[in-house]
Image (cartoon, rainbow, N blue to C red):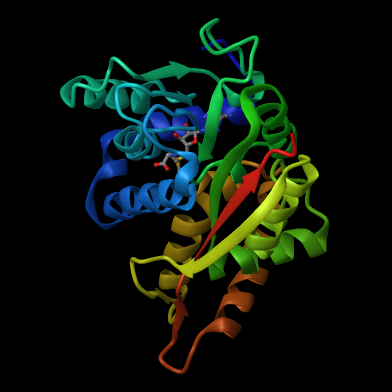
Length: 290
Ligand SMILES: C[S@@+](CC[C@H](N)C(=O)[O-])C[C@H]1O[C@@H](n2cnc3c(N)ncnc32)[C@H](O)[C@@H]1O
């Protein structure tokens, strides 16, 4: 992959470092479950023989869930910037004997340039983007390109995002202070509405937004002590690429932001000193207009 803009490159390094941890443990189980939810939401649009595009495929969770439906008479193409994730995806495809119809390529979705087999016509019946549309600096432009150049008329696009309370509190402050970010803070404060708006602004018809708590159960964020709040800040804000990587602020501004955020999250704590967060999951199902 050629060197892209600095934000995308930072994301690429972040996901390369995550490596095989991504598919392990409770979150690994959730990633697979989420992939099934996305493919189920596409309904009869994905069937035997369908052609499917999976943007930001990662280790291929959505691509493999789709492959189970389309079978060898179909075609699945997964695209990602992380070489490490793609290595996992390719070896899984080989192990499962799916590599004759499941292909992975290393590209930034902002600068899509597909092999000739896929370009020059609109070959795909369905496109997916699992847990990544909020990571694209210009998500509207990417969805519009997929809808007008890659999906068949009437083709379907399914994508999801999440909302957590620590992130919502953070982005609310970012927005009120007018801090510059690469990604839209509305992904943190109004995830479901933002998902809808991106697809509508891209010229697609949003058929439905499905919203449910994430199936991993309620998360109890400990905010009882300064140490606990610091850990929460590090884990949910500083280490989360969709949050901190897009911020353009000085160390002093960051420290000020942190103390305002601490006040905000303490105000959200229940009497036991924990924030009870069911982490909402939003899935948008959209259709091309023609
Ligand atoms: C949270 S992971 C989701 C992976 C996968 N879709 C899933 O549902 O398990 C986000 C993925 O987005 C990819 N990504 C982020 N920005 C990208 C871009 N501009 N082009 C291609 N991939 C990108 C990352 O490399 C990472 O694999």
